[in-house]
Amino acid sequence: MLLSFIICTGLVALISWLKTRRTRLKTVNDYFLSNRSLGFVLVGSSIFLTNLSGNLLIGENESVYINNMSVMAWGMTSILAMLVVSEFLLPVYLRIGAITTPDFLEHRFDAVTKRIVSIVFLASYAINLIPTILYGGALAMNGIFHVSQHTGWGATTTCCVLIVIIGISGSFYSILGGLRAMSISDTLLGLGMMTGCLLISYYGFNYLGHGNLLAGVRVILHQKKEHLNAIGSATDAVPFSTIFTGMLLMNLYYWGMEQFIVQQALASKNLKECQKGIALACVGKLLAPLILNLPGLIAVHLYPHLDNTREVFPRLISDILPGVFQGFMASIVLGAVFSTFNAGLNSSGTLFIMNIYKPWLDKSGKQKNDEQLVRSSKIFQVLLTLMGCCIAPFIILFKGGFYTYIQMLSGFFTVPVFSVLLVGFLTRRVPPVAVKIGLAFFILTYASVILVFQPPMHYLHVLAILFVLTVAIMLLIGRLFPLKVPYQAEKHPVVDIQPWRYRHWVSALLITLMVLAFVLFSSIGIAGR
Image (cartoon, rainbow, N blue to C red; front, side):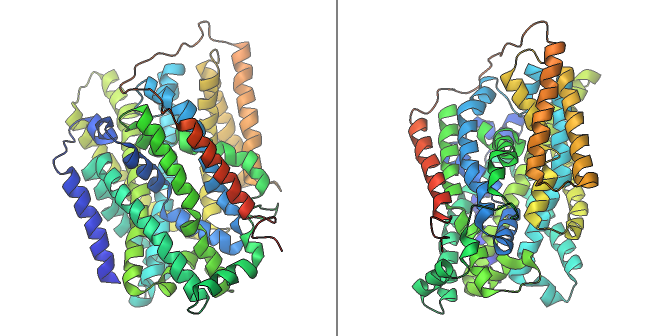
């Protein structure tokens, strides 16, 4: 197992190095955006793998084991969100030549708003994204390789050691290779992930059916059918009603405004390739339940009384796959961890250098060339990695499901930024002061509600209510103190922004398949009694 893991991991790293060793990374455009040269396969693979982190592998399978398939809603509704972003938001970013998503806010409001939102992004990555990725990766590697059993270390010690190892080794991709190296490795890992889905399905059903594949399928379809239901009730981790409130908001933000996701799309060679790449990522989301949810379903039947539910996915991989495939799957899981981790580091470096450090240099009258800026970005990424390694072990103290922890904490950052960007996109007279008041109101109120008052309401509904109130406050201020001169969008495209002619037909097909997925996993589908 260990040998196949080393070979597969080393092979991905070697191919990525061979493909990028002659690529110059001396300018910020080269380092952060791969000189805007990515085709749709690289764009789609990067977006999909950046999202498909160890957190999802651990968290969604745990949620299926504890509850049911209702957690699938996060991925399925992402398809609708991605298509909306592809049609309406990305053309705006490419039209103004944006490098970061807050660049739009400088055009729409002012430089201070851009700086504030960039700081919110960086706080989100430092406190939530980077630590949870490292923690999820450590759980997965310990579960597959049984590190704590072989070493005799406690769970916390093992977690800390693996977090440091993953953090240090994973940062090399971003720090040394830039976005292009990450995109190439993501494409290879995407192919590996699809192969892994087939392996898990085959061996999982075979194991469950005691050597009979069809018998294993029948077990899933006819026993404990309540776990097959994707239409969550009010008591489930993801009630179905939340799809139309907080989940919709968070998905639109994530796919259309989250820097470490959007940066993959901004690196495309033109809008057509960008939209095709997003469609490819949507196909990946349709297939994702095979690895994000199916192992959890199988585990329901194999481990009826599992103490540590966060071990569902890695334990299943360790139990059902032959040794050589365990190593292969471990390398894919680690690659998924690296993918999201590196994207978070690279986008953090982009935000810090372009939106905070460089403007400060310009204001101070200091000058640094692109090579010096790239070097500063690498130093910042090293510091961010060290910070993430320090914060990650404390996640073990949270009770209530790893995936729930990730989404609840991200609410502090995602929805307020989404509110600001949405108002910026849809209005022309709301002034910068409204944005600042809106951000402060949302973050302080959400913190009070979740940490102090803790109302008997799902946190996604809380997010939706606060979103409406925040937008209303900004609109009211805009009505009372409107801009004297309405905002007029400027155009500074650096790539061709001609859209993909078949995007509407493909979007209709993808949305139809998304709806059919919910029908399949419902009381009128395979979850029916």
